[in-house]
Image (cartoon, rainbow, N blue to C red; front, side):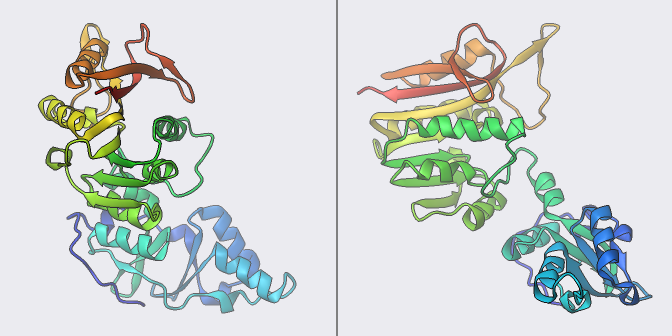
Length: 337
């Protein structure tokens, strides 16, 4: 098995907390046939079959991709499936830090890693389980996305909407997350600066959503500092609800100074809902949802000498904000002097 080099990134949570039961994905060497491998792959949905000895020592893995390669190489009539087994797979210890496993999967473009206790297979870990647990509020999108997922569509369409107000120049993407939005903005900007508090997200962005005109950095918005009038656009989607209001106000006021004349600040935030006359927040990661009128007045106060428009987002549509008091408010503030 290949040795793992650990690094400075730690979650303080062991791999064992995230691993899945491999019992449905196992095969002994003497049982290996094309039909048997395909049946296991279809049944277990892991995309991987683990080859083990009688004492559960892992001797190799075979993936759906390996099966396809065997069929292409040998033909459908006599594929040598055993020849496609990876006998030196990358593995991770059940005691290893989960952040190391996530970094390893991203570096090698793996979606699954075998988990060992010594040499014995005790489970497997998927990248989907890790990224969901590490950052439940962040979307890790690479390339195409599921067009049927309304949540994904709303996130993507907010960035597409924001990109309509970008005409070259330098764009700050504040709370850029995994970088999928920075990549959308980069198609219209001369340069995009993607900033996020999470090093996990920044490293994912650099690996999967890089572009020649994007630079990423790990930085809290409270410490951001740019020269006056040095930015042409600032995009700050789904940011304000995650930051205490006093910090939000400071950030917005400083942003108004960073923008050049004609530049736009494009932001978004959910409007605080009420149930039985009490604030109703269902997302535990939102610490600063504001009622509609408070949100609007805060934006207006922080952006003097700006022309401001407020919108209400559907899935694909953005209508001028009217009487809506719930849902997502998206605003565009353009500097006039």
